[in-house]
Length: 277
Image (tube, rainbow, N blue to C red):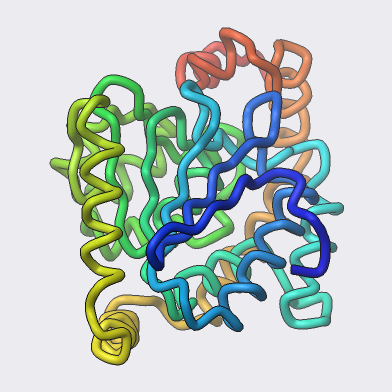
């Protein structure tokens, strides 16, 4: 890694790298986290010993609720380091996560909305706490579109009708409904989640890596959207989030406690329908 990670705690055990988001106050995806993710992916490309990566959160309430809406330009600039040009984007970063050689698992125990949901979707597998996990794509409620892969992944996983429902509603979906819709692999009791994910990660890490890598590459060939489509979604997010009504709604949310450990962030879906903008 080119610098000490500030927002992700990392440990390695028996071929599994456990990456834990620790970016107070609520694990927003901002420039620091984007920088750390790029450096972590750079490390993984060079590391032949790590076979599986498990992403989790140090915060039991928030996996990652969304991007840092006040710092879009800053995290976009950081994401441009992926390609070394202005064409880099958060969607491009998450696409790189999907393509990394290692198997990636999201262990979701709190709120994963917006880009937090898109991060989990970019992982190869997702497992969710029945008691704590909440999923949502909030962008339509702001006046924008999911710009980091959410449209692509959800349409393929859920089908056209359910993807329309979850994206256009900007609503909250608990772990059981997310499982039924295909958003996550499984929902399970909080007490069972960590041990299950750890056992699965260690199991996969024991298998011959050549076969595992080939399987992931072929599944990606079939299931991932063209990179150009991800870039189109990213451009649409940048275009729609700066529209006057989107800006007014964002300001109203920020004034009401967005991006803090507030009731608004815990009940974001309800807050969207109460906006006056």
